[in-house]
Image (cartoon, rainbow, N blue to C red; front, side, top):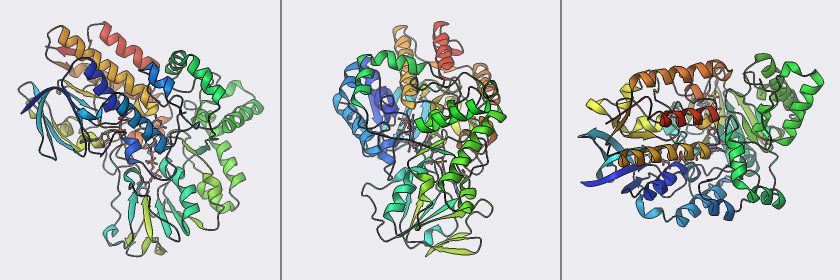
Length: 527
Ligand code: FAD
Ligand code: NAP
C-alpha cells in the first residue's frame, strides 16, 4: 500500500491550495477528485447564467501576489467559464495536476493503526498520516424523490451536475423546479432559449439585481496598486468581503423613514449582496428586516405586470435568512409571454409523468426538466463517504444529532482529520475563497508544527467541541438567520437534523483560531 503523508479529497479551490501548501512543507501528498478536472463548484455548475455573487476582484486567491496581479477578470461578477479558466490557470501555474487523480471518487477513509486508509472507486488503496477533506459545502446535489421521475420521456438536468455539452432548448417546453440562486440565475437565460418555460416554485425567494458590468480598468488598477491592503480590509468585514460597500453600523431605528428608504434604494442600485448591509441591524431586528423585505416586495410589484404573478413571486419570510439571491432580469422574466409560474407551495408536485409534471391535478406538458433544487449542504458530501475514526466510530454516527466540530476544522474521535470550511466555521456566510485560504493555512501550519515537534497526532477534545457547538448556536440564536426553512439549517433535505451549520462572523473566528494556536492548540490533544 502506498504510504503518504497526506491525502486530500477534492480539487476545488480548497483542495488545490491544500496541495500547494503541502508541497511547500515537503509532504508526500495525493489528491483524489471525482471530477475530470479542477475547479470543484465551477467544474460542476455549468448551467446557463452561473456566475459568482462575490465581486471578481475578491473571489480569487490572495496567497500569491504575482498570481493576483497577473490574472485579469473581465466583469464585476465573473461567469462560471471565467472562474473555471482561473482555476485551470492556477493548476497550470503551480503544476498541480501531477499530484491529482481525477475521475476518482473516495469511497472510504478508515483510521487504523494511527493512519488513514483511503479507498477509491478505482481500486486505489493508500495510507496517510493526515487526511484533509476539501470536499466542498455545496457539492452533493439534492435530487428530490419526485414520484414517476424515471418515467419522464425527456432529458432531466440538475444545475449542480450540468452536462459539458450545452443542451439545446430551442423550440422546447422546459420546466424548472426550484427558485433559489441557481434557478434565479438560469431562468432569465432559459426563458430566452426555450419555447416555453414553466417555473415550479415552492418558496418565493428574495433577489436583488447584480447590476453587473465590465470591470473598469481604473478600478482594477486602484485595487492592484495595493491588493494586499484591499484583501486585509475585506478580511475585517463580517462576511470577509465588500469593504468597498461595508455594512452600515447604524440601526434602522436611528434613521428617519426617508433615510431608511434612501439607504435601501442606494443599495438596490449598487447591486448584489450589499443590500443586506443597508442597516446595521437588518439581520438582527425583525422590524428593520420587515422594512427591507417590504422594499423588495414593492420592487417586485413595480417590475412584474400581472399583480397575481407579482404576489406569488413576493417572499414572505425574513429577508436574508435564506441566502439572498443576486440576479439579472429575474423578476422581469415573468413578464414574458412564454414564461409561467406554478405555485407548488401547498401541494408539492403530484408526480412526474412521461409527458411532464402534474401539480394539484393539472398537467404541465414538458420536453425537458431542470432541477434547480440545490444541495445537501455542508454535511451531505462528507456523509456519503464511509469515514471511520478511532474505535471504528463512523462520522455518520458522530453526527447523528447534527454536525459537531471544533472550529469547523476538526472532529473529536477523528485524529489527524481536517475539514476545510466545515460546519461550525464561517464558510458559506463568507467569501469562501478567503475562508478556504484561512483554513488551509491553519491546517498546513498545524501539520508543520506537529512535525517540527516530532508529534504524530492531533485531535479535538470532546469538551472543546461541545463548547464550540454551543457557541455557534448562541451566535446564530442572536440573529434572524434561524427563522426560516433554509439549507443553512438543513431544512431542504427531508429527515435532516435541523442545526444552524455555519458560524456568523469571520474576523472573530480568525481571532479565535489564532488564539487556539497561541495557547498551544487549546482544546486539542496532541500526542
Ligand atoms: P468544491 O468547489 O465544492 O470542491 C469540492 C470538490 O470535491 C468537488 O470537485 C468534488 O467533486 C470533490 N469531491 C467531493 N467528494 C469527493 C469524493 N468522495 N471523492 C473525490 N472527490 C470528491 N461562494 C462564494 O464565496 N461566492 C460565490 O459567488 C459563490 N457562488 C457559488 C455559485 C454556485 C453555483 C455554487 C454551487 C456555489 C457557490 N459558492 C460561492 C460556494 C462555492 O462552493 C465556494 O466558493 C468554493 O468554490 C468551494 O470550493 P471547495 O474547494 O471548498 O469545494
Ligand atoms: P437552493 O438555494 O437550495 O434552492 C433550491 C430551490 O429548490 C429552492 O427554491 C427550494 O425550495 C427548491 N426545492 C428543493 N427541493 C424541492 C422539492 N422537493 N420540491 C420543490 N422544490 C424544491 O439551491 P441553489 O439555488 O442551487 O443554491 C444553493 C447555494 O449555492 C446558494 O444559496 C448559494 O450559496 C450558492 N449559489 C450561489 C450562486 C451565486 O449567485 N453566486 C448561484 C447558485 C448557487 P425551498 O426554498 O422551498 O426549499
